[in-house]
Image 1 (cartoon, one colour):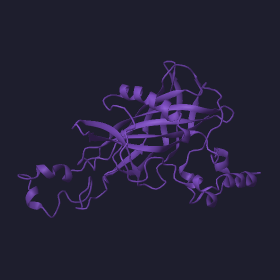
Image 2 (spheres, rainbow, N blue to C red):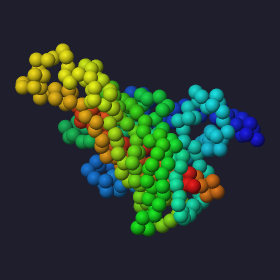
Image 3 (cartoon, rainbow, N blue to C red):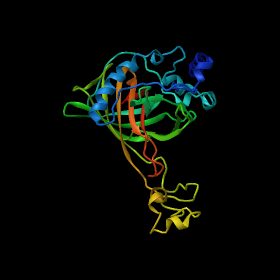
Length: 319
């Protein structure tokens, strides 16, 4: 039976489009496009904007289950060699159904998969009239198919009459780099570390339309052992650029290179909102869309991080 399912899955995915990277942002240089009115001033602003973005995003045609969609059972039935080189390992399973799951007692969300579809960066642009405004622009993905988060799990509890998901473990970060239309590359750590996501409304059931979200931590893109081209690091390496000792005497000239010489491990805050649009009550599976806002890389404290907006789909299983 397993062999038959595997063959059916491979046959369904035999089209070239099934193995293409699921990233749906701009993969070619082009004109920057505005994509969101999300402000970065407060979490409440983001929640309100994300609610509208989720509604629009959930209705986009590319999020409807395609003919080559693959379920969790089909993925599990495939061997390593059948998955290798196809891009399936970077995809979240699809969920079919619109049922309801009642949460009672000790419940966990396991196998949580978060797959980005669109990466955007907040940039300043000026009009012909000289007006300067900030808007999110699409980017070109530079990272290969290793940017999906998977195997995340945590407790699903009830607090003040609302369901709350607390992230505990899993592959909850992925180093990712995107390129702006002008050619500048922006590295960032796509993550949901220490996520605490609370339901938007009270209740103890999960059904299509169920929304939940909350804050998470974004660790530094680099760790203390990383050395820059001058051999400087956070916990090892030189404490100055050897080629310019006169500027780094500690008395004069050191100020302009202080951030470059004194590496830091910066941890910033992020915010993510989920909306469930598919539920398989029998299997305990849920699927839907998400919108996430976080900071980009600071180059270990020497640069101002850019604001990132990530949109995509997710999958999870309640047990």
